[in-house]
Length: 114
Image (cartoon, rainbow, N blue to C red; front, side, top):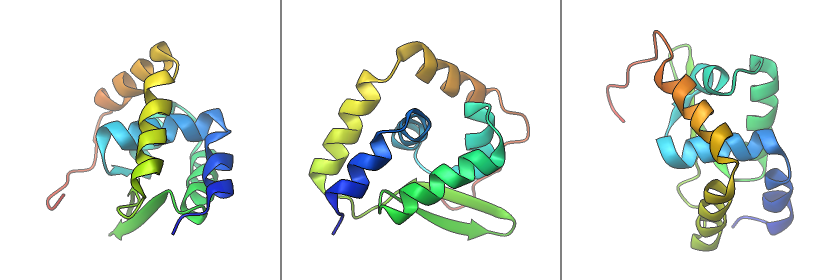
């Protein structure tokens, strides 16, 4: 069961909201894809992903050298609803720019099984 305080604390940061919006809209993404989409340093992205993983919002899996993140499959419905609202209310221009950078990323990892 997800605890509400860490959940809402995760949403209090703009970078984490951007990451969650991408994961909600795109599904599972590699850390390298998130770095390219947000155009931020990898350590910063990884730190925010760790906060969200510890809060129970995301889960990760390793495939070779790649680490993939997605929303936790056991998030309660209320949490998904809040994430959907947050994504809808996110700065439209910023979300579009993130999605455009992701779409234009060269050498994106291939997914054989997702």
